[in-house]
Length: 388
Picture 1 (cartoon, rainbow, N blue to C red):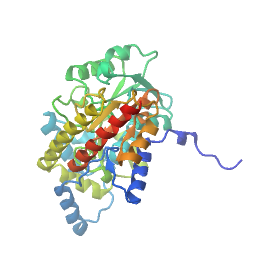
Picture 2 (cartoon, rainbow, N blue to C red):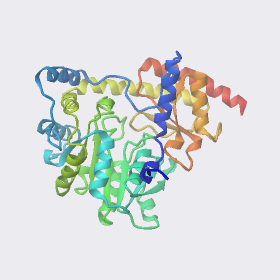
Picture 3 (cartoon, rainbow, N blue to C red):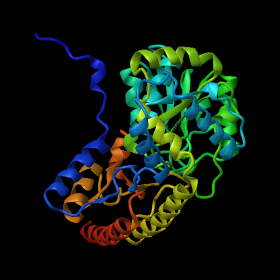
């Protein structure tokens, strides 16, 4: 019979990683590839972050830090909440983690027991569902669409067939870029408090919004868990540094878990993150580049006959319905890469029931690449219209 492999490892793959591999293979074969598949800024970490690391390499032992992170970085994140939200967040409620992904696993382990149910909007970030399943929790999907801006509503929560223990919200969201209005955010938070449901707010795209104001759950719900990261606005994906905001009574349980599972977030990444907190001018300039990319790519989709597109309130994604062209988004994206060099992600990653008619496009790479990809994509989409 042989030795077994745990059932928890049978979770779905994160398909965007497969697309990244195919794009890399195409590049290694000598092809030009335009990366619209992954939510990874096409720029390095901010200058201040890299300079801080250069200095630390010569002067610092870069040994273990405390499990919850360095005092300096936790205070720096606390100061960020004052600047961004005018909210006084004690540093004692902040834990530095190995990216947002590590934060989610720790949050779920701290807040829930095996068998608990956690609701989430679909389409949504697939790793929510996959991490929950791997930990023995039940993911309860709330089907959303353009009629609710791809966000959950109190009405949808009231219609759930059974009680839930937790709710994940993301505003801005991945893959749609949609946001909850402040009033809707508050209504959902109030519903969670009234029904003893733990609210988990994914805020990793805060700082990257285009008109709709951002709401942090920590300012309106004292029992909420907030997850954020230096990957997106701060342009530091590969550094793998994020943070959690937790209620005070959860900090010691979280510290025990983090200390046992990872000891701490890499010291060098924490040093870089502290430097990045001082780089708002550089980072806001990147946001303006994303805004220009957003306009160019949106027009390219419209010109190519793709008109059902999520409202891009924030983040750096479009989620677009290509159901008039295909019912096999995975094959569709493979053809786009092969025939144009444009790498995009199939919607099946984000919605297992309806995603084969959708694609996600990211516009956070450099402006020249987005402009070229937009021109090629419009032409290719028009050709597909003629073939249907």
